[in-house]
Image 1: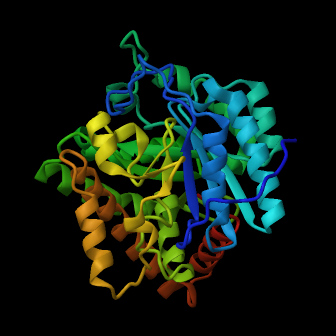
Image 2 (image 1 turned 90 degrees about the horizontal axis):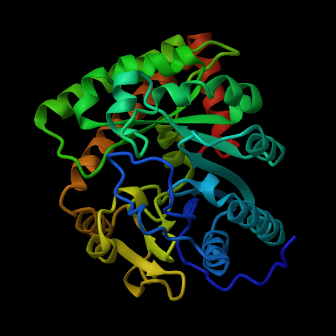
Image 3 (image 1 turned 60 degrees about the vertical axis):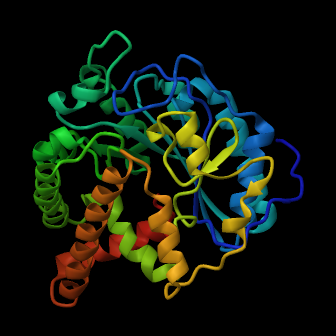
Amino acid sequence: MPAVRETNMRFNKEINKFKIALTSACCLRCTHCFIDKDHPENISFPRAEKGLDLLLGSPGKDKILEIYGGEPLLAFGMAQKTIAAARAKARKLGKNLSISMASNGVLVTPEHLAYIAKNNIRFSISFSGGRKTQDLSRRFPSGAGTHKALKEKIPLLLSALGDRLHVIFCVHPRRCAAAYEDFRELARLGFRNIGIECVHGFPWRGKDYDAFGKNMRKIAAYAVTRSKPGDFIVLEPFMEFFREQAHGNAFCPFLRDLEMYPDGALSLYPYPFVKNSAQRRAVAVGSAAKGVNKKFSACVPSPDSPACGDCVSAYYRLPGLSDGSRAYQMRTEICREAVKDLVGRAAAEPAAKAYLKHLIKIFKEGYT
């Protein structure tokens, strides 16, 4: 167990979820991921520790750490070291810490899963459901699709992890019209905890947004109506409703979107969607060495502050990335309205009440 040093990277705003990209190395060449895999970057442990200090030293008791990359299983030793340090620091500071790891799933072994299960880590795999959608963008370096290889891993993943298994369903703008059927396929395969992400960096056309909105409404309705006690289907975006109830600063991206890249850069943009070094400099909000930039460390989040609204709109403006942000907003609003409707029906409908209670339970457990 590594020694626990004092936290010295404090921050004035609550950070509920923090992501650390351990490495840019990956066994795949997904077309919607812009990480330079030919020149791998790997985080140093001192940088990772700085990130943990930032997360755990910020206000708030409940914390979520997500380990990803690149492919974190290619840096599994560093993942284990970071997780051990995070747990030790959280105990020392009296924080409630939930940990997740996001992977493409292709390299996972029984040994990986034994560690993940033993350490109560939520494991997320990126999988798009149907073969055509998965193989469109998630490919091996040879150009071959990954659907068959990953589908073969699913029984092992489900048997080893059960409810600790999470799937990241990433919607590509060119496959929006198939999103509902792809989601149904994920449910048919046995996934019950499903996140929905939207691809950045590819243009979203008007018809893509229309198709996404239509399919997203069907997905939200299916998750609610298909669920039953003992077999609930949970959409991660449903948790936004509860986050808004629990956090007065839920609108502030520092609450959920802060992450550290392997070189120590701090950003509110997902590491895989930043195309080049110029974009990385533009989206940086600090670094492991210096902490959060003064512009952000000095402000105080307020839902009534025009400065907060202007800050968000000014930050999320890089060409090619704002399209995906708009799709995220659509996703979140549709899911928020679905939960509001569920709350309204819960008093009179036992099934709705049971589902709502399940959502509240897993939110309190630190669902990512």
